[in-house]
Length: 172
Ligand code: SAM
Image (cartoon, rainbow, N blue to C red; front, side):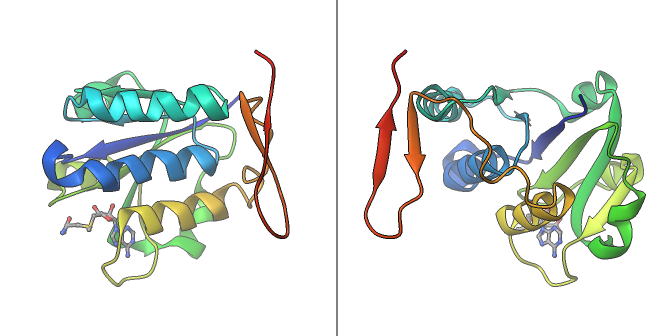
């Protein structure tokens, strides 16, 4: 089955720790299958694997991988989220749903080669904002919201509650 992966480029472990963690967690919650991060960051890997261990699913993380190598081995379309790209509402119908997609999000300045290599350069509005917000909006639209309440068979399952917190601990 086709899947969605994230390529995070320009990650600086000291400065981007929180943002890249949220890129990974948000993309996991919104239906992505995994993330590649260009800079080696074992703490980030450990944090994401710990969430997957508790809340389930098979989201993967690999850090210290060059984007060109990821692209070389990737079978599918490359999407780059950038405020300079085509309008998301116009681009979405052109992205095939039966192929894998690899979504690039930057931290600092993204090299021009990425713009050239991408099959789709897509903006979520033409204002500068955040990779977390851009990715969340893109994924929600691309998946039509279907991933949000998927069961992940985790050790911990949260049951929606109008007030308070209901968490079920599932037997291993
Ligand atoms: N200054 C950097 C540059 O010019 O490439 C971008 C920094 S921005 C904080 C980090 C990332 O957020 C971008 O690489 C892009 O992936 C994403 N982003 C920010 N605003 C966006 C928008 N309006 N549409 C799509 N993606 C956006």
